[in-house]
Image (cartoon, rainbow, N blue to C red; front, side, top):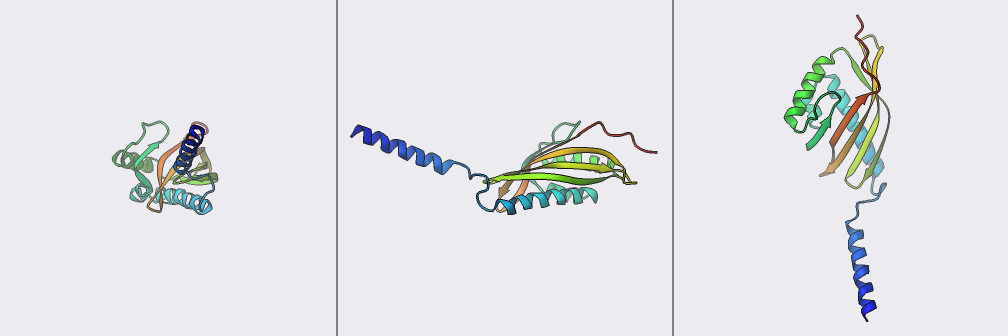
Length: 160
């Protein structure tokens, strides 16, 4: 009787733990979710190119943390707005192009990572790097929760 009781408790505990486990990668409609994150990154680049800080901010969760290279992390919407406004102004005349990327989804969390190239007004590459975004799905919408990027090498000197 004691052995049967212990076995029942163990089985109940395992069932409870299984119910708390996050969804396995690929569970649900992960291809559509991965595409939503890729489209979100493309929307970020398009908004950056036209200087639309509000459109970029709308892609981030309220508790997002953005970790750009060479400056402190932006940990709230105000500091992110300040960073983006300055960065867009100092990047005038360059274009940002996305390269190959990968993504994955596990439950309501996902990631999207890839490469980018920065080109000057003549189309010459002046920098290349990579990025990593962590996304969270809330109320059916994917928002960026963590965002970081860096350059593969120091930026090239501006052309005259």
